[in-house]
Length: 492
Image (cartoon, rainbow, N blue to C red; front, side, top):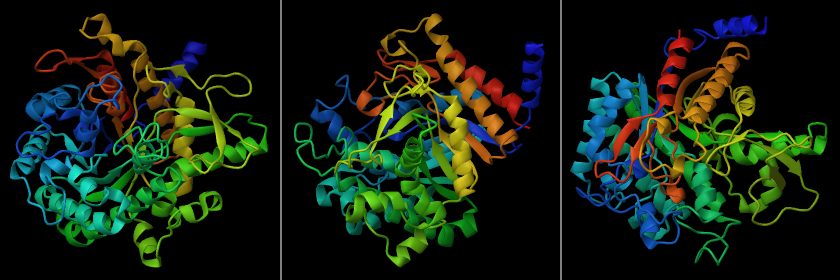
């Protein structure tokens, strides 16, 4: 009987996604391209950080990464083989404008590379989703004026880069994302100081920075420059090119530690606002930051001018959602620390009943939590009422980082299969039963890559990469085929 009910449930969840639903995998230039100093490319803040030593877990660099700069045709052929209908990738700013600035020369070889990649995708019926900025500020802009800490100097440089990309690629690219995870860029780079440009108040870790103010200054720069770029796209390019443009925000589900305690309920909601609404409320809801952030941070949280607020509100055609896991949140009775960025809460792995948030992956913060994924889809949809594109979602597998050479067994990534199966089931239920409008899904990630400060120790790919081979040989893991099967069943 139970099995029969399960089959009925499975049948219900066929054809529940729109016929124009697109799916594929997401990547970032700094993590896959390699060729870091070839064909005119300038260094980014991540090249500087990796080469400085001491900041990357395995002391590696992204100098070669997966060599997708050399093997992009092979990668597109593999994507085609895996049945995807879309591919999300980012542009390396310093490959296109090596010094980054509005007066600096353009690198035609960089533009040519992206033209080739876009054309190759389209020739294989794969829709390109292009991210302008995925954490790699040109080092020259960091040196000149401190990068995003100087909104006045930075904004025209970003505008010039974005406009150039619309001019060069917009005849074929119809899906644009301005920024990937502005919150993570701000907090990991300027509060924790573990990501480039490695600034924080912790002098044992970073030479300079102020964790209590800089993340909010940088986040403000990202929002204002995003809104200006969107306005330019909509006014100058959209009428001719007919594309859409938005922003991608990070955010994991926060669940009360004690579901019965109103203080923990409030703490979980406050955490969601510090984590997600920090960027989403200005863009989709109010044109301003959440009140709970203003209450705690006061003047450390910048203010939008009336003009900026108008520009920011409504500046995304879709909700780009990056989400991986869930956490339990407990209220604190003490007053917030000056370097607190979470809403003055404790974030825990177990709830009051001792229930763990999910199965532990190879990555310390990431547990499989599909129950929270469905709740988060609902929370975002109810709060913002904008079509959702899941732009990143995926996992590492326990022990997989220790595998150096591939075996048939190592390609049986059962843990990842269970992750994708459960999350896509949660997504299908959110659409079919809760009425959430989801239109795209991108798994993180296509192939194992250089995972920022974790180096090559986190394998997120559905394709295994043998980093010890000169050609970074690729092998498809079983999860890639399972994901394709799931979408063949779910999409009308």
